[in-house]
Length: 142
Image 1 (cartoon, rainbow, N blue to C red):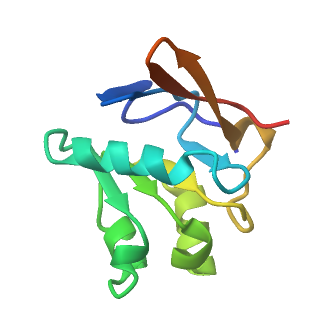
Image 2: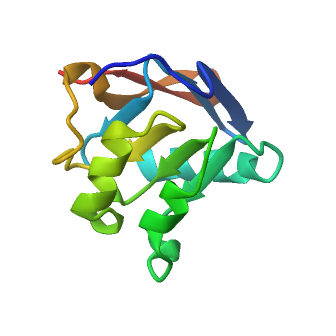
């Protein structure tokens, strides 16, 4: 499934020695990759920005006790960032995300099952050292 980004085309933030610089090409971005590639660190940097940017909603393992499906279904016009999506998302919520035309999703995990995605939705995190900082970007997976 490929459709235009709804909330933002670009997200960037700087955090001590890291720069997160994500360009979004559609409304569902699945960030996948091996452990230890800074995916969760990227989530943390985005979550820090949530306090100042009301267009962002972040969910992770700390929200496990909440009804994630209801939060996602009752949210509109937001970039919803989900870390540990493999654990947090049940099949019904995955199907809702796949058809959601009111939000944009950045899903961090390894299992895109039931999201009706194509290779245009799959990305990996790439890091590049620039001087004293590490720049984190998303690039097509495979």
